[in-house]
Image 1 (tube, rainbow, N blue to C red):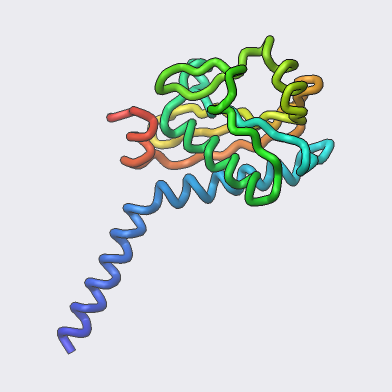
Image 2 (cartoon, rainbow, N blue to C red; image 1 turned 90 degrees about the horizontal axis):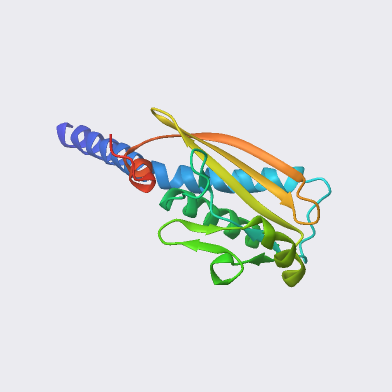
Length: 173
């Protein structure tokens, strides 16, 4: 009887440990996918799957020219989710019409928006910001029309800061 109890305690402890270790990645993926689903569902006018959508790195709200592993990862997940839903996604890292800053991600220069939208026949771009608080990171995502720079949809959410998210954000406190 003692062996069975010890085995159950070990299994439960192991599962709790795995949940703790995997929480950030799972929550980051899940929350990014949910944000993308909401952005698509609420876009007015609706997004056209055959017409390209651009994705930019999510940036620090306090410095719009600064991103992080966290911001770049969210944009990767958003692009992946759009592709899973059969939207045509243009990979910005392969384009020369964006400002690339080492270790920061890609940033669109406003004067290039019209040129990019014409060149790729892109209907919209997904942009986003994140803001750090003590134990939470707040994220805001928007789909912006490239025709007139209006917001087609938006979604805001938050994630708890854990050791993994802090590392992705470059914050160690």
